[in-house]
Image 1 (cartoon, rainbow, N blue to C red):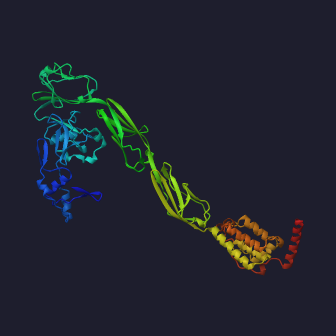
Image 2: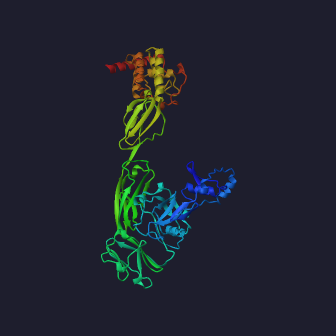
Image 3: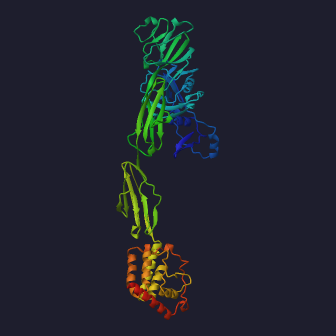
Length: 593
């Protein structure tokens, strides 16, 4: 015995239960363990059970565990055959929650009929169908998906689904319950035969009961027909002079059980009418949103024998069976679905188009973002959505953009803040947010370098050659020495002789050109120191320093810091230097002219 609690089925400790407790359990499931039949009605004896309602605590788990595997709960499921003029055939009904109810025909077969006949005391099961005109009297469904092996002692032992809420739509639309035909207790069966007739045809059923045809009688679904002397040739169904049963222009209502009998002997014909199928599709809503559960059902309006149902999508086979279930439907499931029904009499198809709508889906994989100064950043707000999705990007609560993709082309410190995107269409809304932080890069270190050198320039404050050389050397090499082993004195001496420092890899050509102008041999053509400082300051405010100085490419090993080696490495003497300078100046003056 199990009970559904906390979203799962749990075993009950029943080792101390008595008969009253067991009866109460069966009552909770809609059945009664004790009762009697009277005038085809089941009366439950509930006197004892209604007086007792005990609650047991399982305080000895070991005892319970030992008894759980041995003790089983059985509830009787009363059954009867009803709706026909015979005690051995009719609609199968079960007594459920105080009322007689029907069983859905889905999956019903002869093995199920065997169990019903056995439970009712009949020796043999003959057929699962006796007629289409059984009296219904508004009886509801309360059981479906019955699946017996055929050897169970009663219906209670068969796999099934109980309850009105679990009835498949096909049964509710059809309205017909399961049927059964059992071997009568007081008759001897000579033969049983299943035959199929087409609508509109004329058919004859032969009857031979121990070669006494003329004395045989006929009954349809338990209702006796008049003998041949009372027949009229105008009757559509009549007994011929020779004892055969003639059916003129077969109709759908002619399906059912035909009995040819004499004395204790009987012969059965189970007649099925071949009817081309006609189907409808249910479960296809006009609004289907991705992620919803959708169950398409192919409902058989008419069709005998029972048609085989096949589902296709865009003319491609999907599966066989009444229903097509999508537990969580996807956009890719959109398309044309066809229910195809086929039997010996013909076929029919019904189409339905599924259009799956998709609410916005956001898949941002971050919450906080660090981006480098002057770097680019882009991200999408949503990745899927149908129909059209409307987007709002905000920064610190202020509308930023209505485009799906948010782009920062060149990050500055003002881009730091709280970003949120909202995506919405007619079928849903989604949003997400994250924080962007802007961090300094090697270019920012270049800015700091320029600012340090500007401050140095303010302290130097002179326009003489050594300071210009020192200033630009510091700017371009981060106060390092351009070549290993060269002192500042040697650098000045080499510049005096016309040497110019090659462009370092981390310095932009614009800054290198400025450096070369500062090292012009003629002081008159060198930029004033204040102008030089102002130019550097402008670069900082225009934020072009990253282009001028890329310290990410700075070669620290090459531009190593060394102490000034002094005058011994200062190069030529002052007199030699002046002569060389005068010579170059003369050449420069000549070139200028």
